[in-house]
Amino acid sequence: MQELAHGWKDDPETLPLLKDLARLDEQGFVRWAAVRELARGWKDNPETLPWLKDRARSDEEEDVRRPAVQELARGWKDNPETLPWLKDRARSDEHGDVRQVAVRELAHGWKDDPETLPLLKDSARSDENESVRETAVRELARGWKNDPETLPLLKGRARSDGNWWVRQAAVQELARGWKDDPETLPLLQDRARSDESFNVRRVAAQELARGWKDDPETRAFLEEHRQA
Image (cartoon, rainbow, N blue to C red):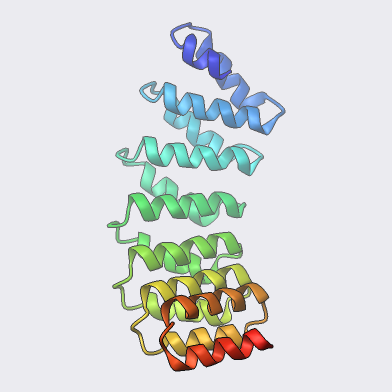
């Protein structure tokens, strides 16, 4: 299929064939590959954008909807319908992997849109999928460090998110982006001692060793837990 798309792009049967494969092939990875080739090779065709939107909404597999969302966000950024459509996918797709991609693309491509930051905050706090919350946490920490709500949100996720992966992400971002905040060191010490997940405790201890190497309490803390 890739050879067909690249070598016979001008053949009048290639485009209809790719569309049929993208809609009808029983294998998800074939539909995914067809979506990618159509998005990259027929961007100027007026039927490609509405067709991609249909695949991104309607394909039964998230592994096809996800690349359709990504290709649309990157290839049609200047289209006035792309941003509201992407927000809808970030909020409404039934699968977390698709919402995660939409959240990431919004953070990278539409940082200045006034609805992007509130959407990321909501995703970080409330999305039912841990991958979406983890992505939103990292994007907020890296893209909106100076927003007054970012630091409290990260602290809340580090302490109380129900998934260890999200707590770990929040711990890492706090340690690397807010080392000078007076609450960061105590929070890391608390997570290294008390988090129920070994992975979070390990990451918190690693960040303490990297960022507070000369702090006398850190050395004592790490020695105590090394011996334990």
